[in-house]
Amino acid sequence: MVYDEQNVFSKILRGEIPVNSVYEDEYALAFEDINPQAPVHLLVIPKGSYVSLDDFTMKASEKEVAGFFMAVGQVAREAGLSESGYRILANHGNDANQEVPHFHVHIVGGRNVGKMISLKDN
Ligand code: AMP
Image (tube, rainbow, N blue to C red; front, side):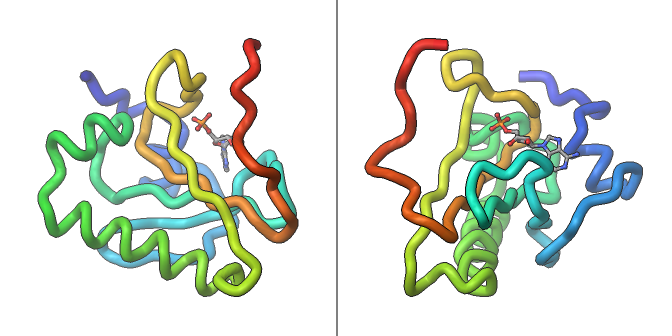
């Protein structure tokens, strides 16, 4: 799996593209999705260069994995979603229609987001 340094989230990490950032620590950056699917739609990305969850869990250190997922929980709490609830999701590869080849977790909430993600054909 070859990481593309020109992908949009890599540019965001380098500060080349502005985002509405909501959280940052040594392992993760979180910001608002540019095309929100719910009243709250945040993206959490690791600081390291990983294509997807598959790549991340193969190559990242335990510290990076733990730090990243701690950040996901923290971001959801800070967004005020702990009481009302939220969904996280991560797309890997073609069948999941992953658009940006830098691992990211979506956090969606702020309304009832239904029972399950759409599994319809495109
Ligand atoms: P995925 O299909 O899981 O790869 O999702 C990629 C997500 O990145 C989509 O929800 C896009 O709306 C979002 N996105 C793409 N470019 C930007 C950007 N410049 N700032 C914030 N979100 C973005």
